[in-house]
Image (cartoon, rainbow, N blue to C red; front, side, top):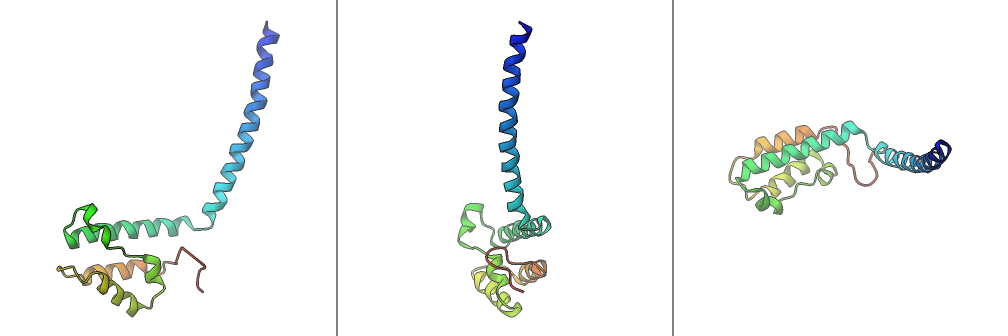
Length: 123
Protein backbone atom coordinates (compact mmCIF):
# COMPACT_ATOMS: atom_id res chain seq x y z
CA UNK A 1 0.00 0.00 0.00
CA UNK A 2 2.87 2.32 0.66
CA UNK A 3 3.84 2.09 -3.01
CA UNK A 4 0.32 3.03 -4.07
CA UNK A 5 0.19 6.03 -1.75
CA UNK A 6 3.47 7.44 -3.01
CA UNK A 7 2.43 7.14 -6.65
CA UNK A 8 -0.36 9.78 -6.52
CA UNK A 9 1.92 12.05 -4.51
CA UNK A 10 4.53 11.85 -7.24
CA UNK A 11 1.92 12.64 -9.88
CA UNK A 12 0.62 15.52 -7.80
CA UNK A 13 4.09 16.93 -7.46
CA UNK A 14 4.50 16.96 -11.21
CA UNK A 15 1.22 18.78 -11.55
CA UNK A 16 2.19 21.29 -8.87
CA UNK A 17 5.54 21.90 -10.46
CA UNK A 18 3.94 22.76 -13.80
CA UNK A 19 1.47 25.06 -12.02
CA UNK A 20 4.34 26.73 -10.15
CA UNK A 21 6.13 27.36 -13.43
CA UNK A 22 3.03 29.08 -14.81
CA UNK A 23 2.72 31.21 -11.65
CA UNK A 24 6.42 32.08 -11.82
CA UNK A 25 6.05 33.09 -15.47
CA UNK A 26 3.02 35.25 -14.58
CA UNK A 27 4.96 36.88 -11.73
CA UNK A 28 7.81 37.70 -14.09
CA UNK A 29 5.39 39.31 -16.54
CA UNK A 30 3.85 41.45 -13.78
CA UNK A 31 7.31 42.40 -12.59
CA UNK A 32 8.26 43.66 -16.02
CA UNK A 33 5.18 45.86 -16.16
CA UNK A 34 5.95 47.61 -12.87
CA UNK A 35 9.59 48.15 -13.77
CA UNK A 36 8.52 50.69 -16.39
CA UNK A 37 7.81 53.20 -13.62
CA UNK A 38 10.01 53.89 -10.64
CA UNK A 39 8.25 52.87 -7.42
CA UNK A 40 9.45 56.05 -5.73
CA UNK A 41 7.86 58.15 -8.51
CA UNK A 42 4.61 56.18 -8.24
CA UNK A 43 4.51 56.64 -4.47
CA UNK A 44 5.25 60.35 -4.80
CA UNK A 45 2.44 60.75 -7.32
CA UNK A 46 0.04 58.85 -5.06
CA UNK A 47 1.02 61.06 -2.11
CA UNK A 48 0.38 64.19 -4.20
CA UNK A 49 -3.01 62.90 -5.36
CA UNK A 50 -4.03 62.13 -1.77
CA UNK A 51 -2.85 65.59 -0.69
CA UNK A 52 -4.89 67.19 -3.51
CA UNK A 53 -7.98 65.24 -2.47
CA UNK A 54 -7.64 66.27 1.17
CA UNK A 55 -7.01 69.92 0.29
CA UNK A 56 -9.98 70.10 -2.08
CA UNK A 57 -12.25 68.80 0.68
CA UNK A 58 -10.94 71.56 2.95
CA UNK A 59 -11.25 74.26 0.29
CA UNK A 60 -14.77 73.41 -0.77
CA UNK A 61 -16.27 71.90 2.41
CA UNK A 62 -17.88 69.25 0.19
CA UNK A 63 -18.68 65.66 0.83
CA UNK A 64 -16.67 63.19 -1.25
CA UNK A 65 -19.42 62.50 -3.80
CA UNK A 66 -20.04 66.21 -4.42
CA UNK A 67 -16.49 67.08 -5.47
CA UNK A 68 -16.29 64.70 -8.43
CA UNK A 69 -16.86 67.52 -10.94
CA UNK A 70 -13.47 69.06 -10.18
CA UNK A 71 -10.56 67.03 -11.52
CA UNK A 72 -6.99 68.19 -11.34
CA UNK A 73 -5.00 66.21 -13.90
CA UNK A 74 -1.35 66.14 -12.87
CA UNK A 75 -0.21 64.96 -16.31
CA UNK A 76 -2.06 67.85 -17.96
CA UNK A 77 -0.40 70.31 -15.60
CA UNK A 78 3.04 68.82 -16.25
CA UNK A 79 2.68 69.66 -19.96
CA UNK A 80 2.27 73.36 -19.11
CA UNK A 81 4.79 76.02 -18.16
CA UNK A 82 4.87 77.24 -14.53
CA UNK A 83 2.76 80.29 -15.39
CA UNK A 84 0.26 78.20 -17.36
CA UNK A 85 0.04 75.69 -14.48
CA UNK A 86 -0.85 78.48 -12.06
CA UNK A 87 -3.42 79.92 -14.48
CA UNK A 88 -4.99 76.50 -15.09
CA UNK A 89 -5.30 75.84 -11.35
CA UNK A 90 -6.87 79.26 -10.78
CA UNK A 91 -9.32 78.53 -13.58
CA UNK A 92 -10.22 75.13 -12.10
CA UNK A 93 -10.68 76.64 -8.64
CA UNK A 94 -12.62 79.76 -9.68
CA UNK A 95 -15.76 78.62 -7.82
CA UNK A 96 -13.85 78.24 -4.57
CA UNK A 97 -14.68 81.08 -2.19
CA UNK A 98 -11.81 80.36 0.19
CA UNK A 99 -8.26 81.62 -0.43
CA UNK A 100 -6.62 79.18 -2.80
CA UNK A 101 -3.08 80.56 -3.20
CA UNK A 102 -1.66 78.29 -0.48
CA UNK A 103 -3.15 75.25 -2.22
CA UNK A 104 -1.81 76.31 -5.63
CA UNK A 105 1.66 77.09 -4.25
CA UNK A 106 1.69 73.82 -2.30
CA UNK A 107 0.69 71.77 -5.33
CA UNK A 108 3.19 73.44 -7.66
CA UNK A 109 5.93 72.87 -5.07
CA UNK A 110 5.02 69.19 -4.68
CA UNK A 111 4.96 68.69 -8.47
CA UNK A 112 8.54 69.96 -8.97
CA UNK A 113 10.61 67.20 -10.55
CA UNK A 114 7.58 64.96 -11.14
CA UNK A 115 7.44 63.35 -14.57
CA UNK A 116 4.43 62.74 -16.77
CA UNK A 117 3.29 59.12 -16.52
CA UNK A 118 1.05 58.64 -19.55
CA UNK A 119 2.53 58.80 -23.02
CA UNK A 120 6.17 59.32 -23.94
CA UNK A 121 8.38 61.15 -21.48
CA UNK A 122 9.63 64.53 -22.65
CA UNK A 123 13.32 65.33 -22.33
